[in-house]
Length: 191
Image (cartoon, rainbow, N blue to C red; front, side, top):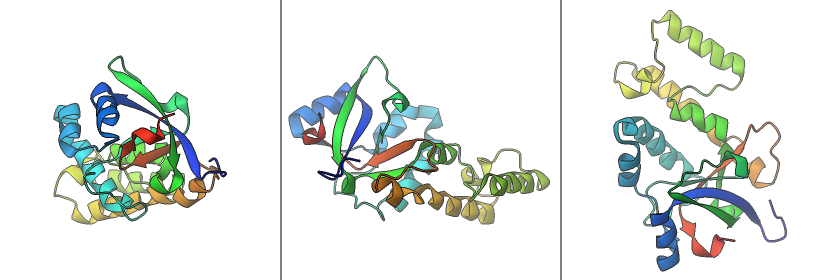
């Protein structure tokens, strides 16, 4: 974090449509329909994870009117996935507009998995599922057969934000890789 002006340098790969919207409007918001279009048949998995993220993340950073889903950004350039039809944005973002978390925990949520307090906790949870005959952990979220386990898994996801304040202060100890959620992108942030 750059403590002199309370900003953080973040990197994000965005489509040319987003970049053009930033150029013309100065701000851009992500919409649910774009996620559905992008992920097609896999959309239900992403929608389950993104909907949960929206409900929880707005407790940390207010969601502005017009925002439906977050944009993803990274502290380290090497974590950004770029494609031919995208542009890399290098942004200097006010820390108060950033939701910080560990990318590896977010990937567990995208796989609709339990986030344990420790690796041992996660292993015990998987063992319990095997004992109950549940082979696909994602079935807990995607079906209505396991309401108690679904609640337990979704409650575990709140651990995604355990490191938010520490990362905001520049302390990344114990973090695999810093990822950030942004409710909006602003032209003024682009370096």
